[in-house]
Image (cartoon, rainbow, N blue to C red; front, side, top):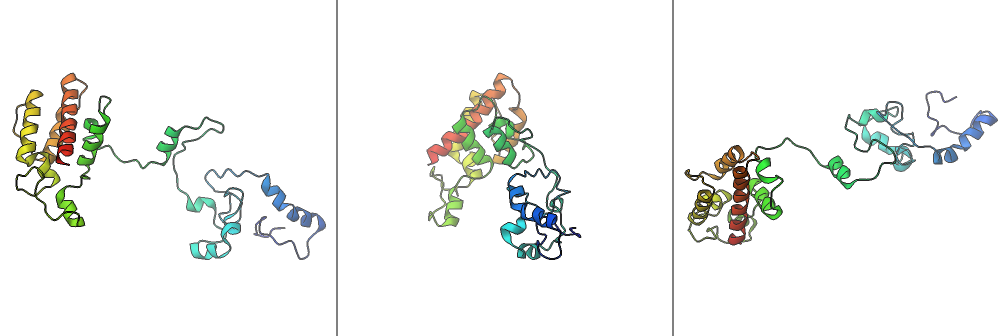
Length: 232
C-alpha cells in the first residue's frame, strides 16, 4: 500500500480502499498515543517518523529541511547520530543533578596538576584561584594592556618589571620572597623555579596522601591565592 512511501506522509486521496482511508485519517490520533524509543535509529525515518517529541522533522520544519541537509529523503535517524554513553538508562529513576552534570559536561584527559588543586583537603577559594592561575586565566597587566584597560604593564608590587603570570608567580622579588619563606616553613630547601617548573615540581612532590604532601598542596594554593589578592 505504501509503495516505498511513509505512513505519516502518505496521501489519503486517489484510488484507496475505504479501510485504508480510515487508517490514514486516524494518524493524528495514533500519533498522540505513540512513544518512540529510537535506540540506534536504524528503523526510524529521519524526516517522517514522529520521533521528536511526538512530531516529525518534516512536520516541524517543512520539506525544505531535507534539501538543506543534503541527505536522502529515505535517511534514517541512525545516519545522523553517533555512539554515545547512556546516563539515564532506567525509566522512573529519581532525577539527579549530579547525573545531569556528568551527562552534559565535556570530558578531557586529567592534567598532571589535577591532584594539587582538586584534593579532598582543599580550601575552595584557594583551589579556585590556583586553578585559574594554572590555566593562565588571571588578568595580569600584560593582558589588561592588550584589552585597553590599563596604560602600564609595570608590576603591581613596584619592582619595575612587566607584570605577567610567570613574573607574578614567583619571579617578582616580593612574591619570590614570600614563596621562599613558605617553602622553608614546609621544610623545602631548593632554588626557586620558573612558574611552569614550580607546577611540575609540586605535581611530582606533593601528590601523595602523606601529611607533608597535603601541607605542600595547601601552602602552594594559599600562596598563589594571597599573592593574587594582595596584587589586587
